[in-house]
Length: 227
Image (cartoon, rainbow, N blue to C red):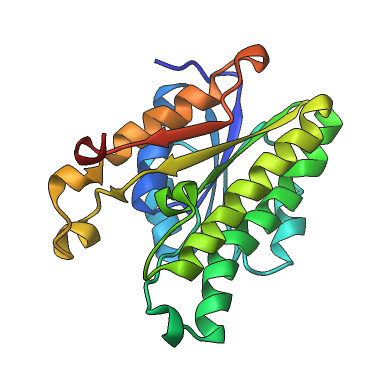
């Protein structure tokens, strides 16, 4: 098991299926956890695992940056995101804004919140969750989702290349299939085509526990059916 007893991790999207699994894995590994989320989902998440701080903020709001800058963390694990499918010719400006606001803008604000502190301490890690479609650079009927998740990956990897010399690194997690959630089961996604969120959480903990000289910048995690 990963040992993160010396780390303080900010976890966004608290209450979501992936964030819940990651929070438990981080707690088991001994990390101090700062939860970021909204409303009832955040409150439920805070009841499940010990936390050092709980922040109820809207990461699409620029004001969230100042809130996050008041908290010292070693790692940001950003799970906030949204999915939507539509025929390419029927996509609207609202569809565009929703996908890029939820997937990319939230990451931008979260990163802007934690980066000053990480750069001051010359140590930090930002992990962003992309998508299998982005890794493949193709998402039929989900072009905007795919583009926004590709932006997530490009942003994190660009931060890594720019800032690794100053002690701040980046890592991109690509779930190469649907995450096993009640919603996906209700939608009829086959069990074999879904990824266990606990497995993804273990992958995150593995990436967070790597030493600088054995850093992981990209992780692709597959369900059985796609291996």
